[in-house]
Structure formats: structure tokens, C-alpha cells
Image 1 (cartoon, rainbow over the protein chains, first blue to last red):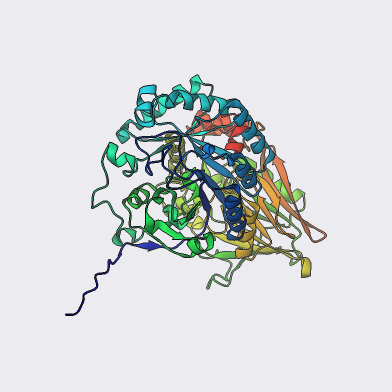
Image 2 (cartoon, each protein chain N blue to C red; image 1 turned 120 degrees about the vertical axis):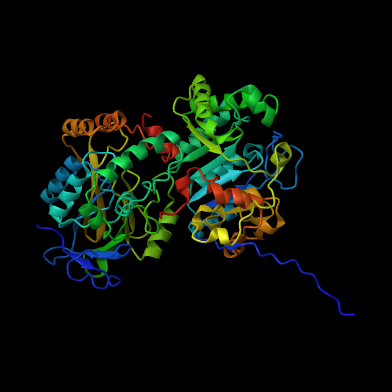
Amino acid sequence: MARVELAVVDDSPAVELEALDQLWFQVAGTVCNLRCKHCFISCAPDNHSFWFMTREQVAEALSQSTELGVKEYYFTGGEPFMNNEMEAILADTLEVGPATVLTNATLMPPRRARRLARLRDASLYTLELRVSLDGITREMNDAIRGEGAFDRCVQGVETLVDEGFLPIITCMRSWPEHETESYLEGFRDLLAQVGYHRPRIKILPPLLMGEEAKRTRGYDETERVTHEMLHGFDLSQLLCTRARLVTARGVYACPILLESPSARLGDTLGEAARRPARLRESACYTCYLSGAICSNTPSSAGADR
Amino acid sequence: MSGIPFVPGEDEPGAGNGTAPRSGGEALLSSNDGEPLTRVAALGGIYSNHRALQVAIDDARARGAQAIVSLGDLGAFGPSPDKSAAILKKEGIPVVRGNYDDSIARGLEDCQCGYTDPRDNHYARISYEYTLANTSREHRQWMSGFPRHIRFRMGTGPDALEVLAFHGSPRRMNEFLWETTTPTHFLQAMAHDAGADVLLGTHTGIHWSRRLDGKRWYVNAGALGRPANDGRREVWYALLELEQGELQPHFVPVSYDVETLADEMLDEGLPDEFIETIRTGWWTTCLEVLPGKERARGRW
């Protein structure tokens, strides 16, 4: 009797890298000092599935990146400042281009903020600190980010502002969209109390995966990017057409899909830059709807029409 | 000097009769008298500041500019957009298509600046709707012919420099190239891909320049439309000079009649916040897109 081979056919759309504008580093792996209930990759103190990157690993990618014409560098985790080499890594990066760190700002003693300010002032390029704060009150934030996180984060923001930083406060939207303006007002009031009078605030849509899928709901089956949806769509809105994520073990299509084996596009940056990314995950649907939410500003990516 | 002849590029068939090239193409620029270009003025975003525009043009000619090129964004922010368009047409100044011109010409919903901040969007909408409603059909038609790029050569022989003028970047008219977010290697790759020695753009509203490898440069001409967020009332344009085979980019401050422009803006019902900007030199709107370093140098 003939054997029938059953192969899984992946018919999800694939998109090429148009330009490597953004290079992301999973610099703290999945290690974080917090255990947030909405984390899309379930980072935690004991999640060691991805380990810290070394300064040498980052330096090697930085060196390749100048050949590839990278425009911006982003550092994420986990909590980047859990990595002992983070400041040295930033010093290396700021020699070649602008750096953005996605941090919870809870590990921000004044001496560190002072050193970061010195790195910033010594560079031609900007050093952006993007601070995650998920509520305008202690209760609201700590229900998501854990007890004590609010006070430590707000203290961290104050420390950064004292050093002349204008951190970008990012918050996952956990309210109905039409209430956003009143929450923005709440953030402005809160930040003014710690001396931050012209805050930069970025509201992000929720990603219904990892811990957030348990907290609220996961994506349903219809929430997928299909071939039809890409007709006439500006592909540059998708992060994977403009970015790659380097980790301690391999290079991925984007920072959201760290736990999706299919998003691993190669061992090296060169290899991963040549391979197209498949839009097979539900998170791709959020990126499709909202644009490249991971960038500092919408105009970091995106084409004119 | 009486205007710059417009020479259509090779990809502009049928545009050889002095008419503007088709949209989306590339045009060439040369001096009026056939002499090699060694001094060219570049005007950044005008944003309807017709008063600064006229002063800048007169100033550039007084300084011996053989050619003047506008890098687009004729409208936005200021009063009576047709006045700036009329000056550029009268003076025969070629214009690169900016995102604002593109939106106005095509009647798009917004200016393609890409703001997400509700406050920035509020003011961007006021500015765009005012400009769209007050730009004549004739000027919109004219704008629809603006090329995406204008290419010209400065100097002759082995020392000649190829200059590519655009609005945002060679690849996207609404790409922001700020001084503190644009790596040198990125600009070098862009110049290489564009086959240009000098990349000349605007879009950010703050002037800056950087020498790249060899004799290559990136120059951001800044804006005539509003001050450079530096607490000064002057606005800026760029004067590119070729000296002994090397480019020397100069930024020229332009003093104009701020109070009369403020009165016109008031009469047109434009927001007080816009008037405050031209009076104080500090940006009050469209702040979201500023990188941290540039933002920190401003007041708001």
C-alpha cells in the first residue's frame, strides 16, 4: 500500500525585507525583574528561554549593520538594564547611530541615569528611553505590572527627567479606544507631578498573546493576515519589511514573534535579511491594523502615498 | 537672473517644451547662461510664509546664486497659500514635490506627516484644511507636475559634484532625516544608491549638514516657513557653494516682517499657537516627530 505523505502547507503571505531600517536586539533575552500580566513573550525573572546578549555579540551585529545601511537601533528584553553590559553596549551603539531602550525604568538609580546622560551628551545621536507604564494610578498599573512597579517606575521617570531626558512613556491600551484622551490627560497630570511637563506618550494596542491572552482573550481564528488583505496595502507599515531582531540565538523577523519558531529567519543577520518573513501569526494582524507600533514614531517607517 | 530653465529628464517624454515634467519623475536643473553652477540656493519648507520667501529669494540673488531650487511644502501653517505659489511661479523657481504639495494637488485627506498624537493631529488638520480650501485650482494643477527629484551638477570635470534634491529622502518624500537619528553610514548608502555626491532635502524644518565619505555631503536646508525651534525669529535657507572642488554648505538666516505675517495669520483665523511660534522661535505644535535631542533643545 502506498504511503501518503502529509505535509503541512504554509500558505500565509510572505514579505521581503525592503530595507533594514531598524535593527532590534533582544539584549536581555526573556529575563525581566517584573512579571507583567500582559507580556506578549511572558518574560520573567525565571524565564531563561533566551539569555542575555554579550557586548561582543551586539558589536558584531553593529559592525554588519553599517554595511546594511541600518538607520535606528532598538534594545529590548526582558528588561535591558538587567544586562550588566548594557551601558557599554549603548556606548558602542551611539558611536554609529541612534539608540532606543525599551525599559521599565525600575532599575534606574541616579548614578545610572547620570552615566546614561553622559553617553547621550557624548554622542551625535539621540539616546531614547522608552518607559513602560501601564496605568495612571498605582492600582491600575500594578494590577498588570505587579506590586510596587508603579512607584519604582515613576521614580525612575523622575530620575531620567532630572538628567534632562524626555522619556517616551508607553502604555498598552487597556481601556475602550474612545477613552484614550481622558487617559492621556491622566498621564500628563501624573507626569507633571514628578516634573515631567512636556511628556512624550505613546499608547499601544494590546497584543493578544503570551500573558495577555490569559488575562483577556487570545486572537480568534479569523484574526489573520490573508493574501487578499495585502492587495493595495502599504507593506512598509509592517515592521518585518523594515526590521530584524537579533537574539543570543538567531535572528528573527520581529521582536513580537520571539517565541514563534517560524519567525526565526537565520543564524546571521545577512541570512535573515535575505529571507522573507511569513505573516502567519495572529500578532501580524495587529501590526497590519495598527502599523509598525514598535517604532518610536509612526514616521520612522511608512511610505508616502 | 530671470528664472531657471527647466530641462526635463530622460524619463519625462513629451516634457521638452518648457512644461513641467510629469509627476513622480526627475527633472534637471542648469544655470541660465550655461555657466557651470558653483552657487545654488535651496529653499526648504515654505509653509505659506510668503514674506520670508520673497526676502530669501532676493537675498540669494544678492549673494550671487546662479540658481534657486525649492524643496517643496509650499503650504501649511501660514496664511494665503496662493501668495507663495505666485511668487515661485513669477520667479520661475523649480520645485520638488513635498508631501504637502502632493496632498494638496491630489486632494488627499491629510498632509501625510504621519502624526498619531491627538494634539498634533488637531493642529495638522486645521492647517491642512485651511490650505486645501485656499489653494486655487490653477496652483493645485501646477503642483501636480512637481517632480519627486531634481538633479543638477555643480562644477565641471573631475571635480564636479552630482546633487540630488528631494523633499524628505531620495526614497520617500515624507521621510524625516533628523541630525540625531540619521547615521552617517545610512546617508552614505543612500547617496551611493542615488548616484549622488550631495543629498539635498528638507521636511524636518531644522537645518543641518554632515560631511560623508570623500567629498559627499548631506544637506538639510531647514525651513522658511517657521523658525528652527531655537528661540530665534529668523528662518533659514541653504546656500551651496563649490570652492576648489569642495562643497561648502552655508545656512543663511532670513529676517522678515514677522509682525505683519502674524497679523495676516490672525486675520485668516489661524491658531494662536502658530503665531506664537513665529513670534518666539519655539515650536508649539507638530512636536511628536522630534527626536529626544532636538525636542530637548526646544521649549515645548
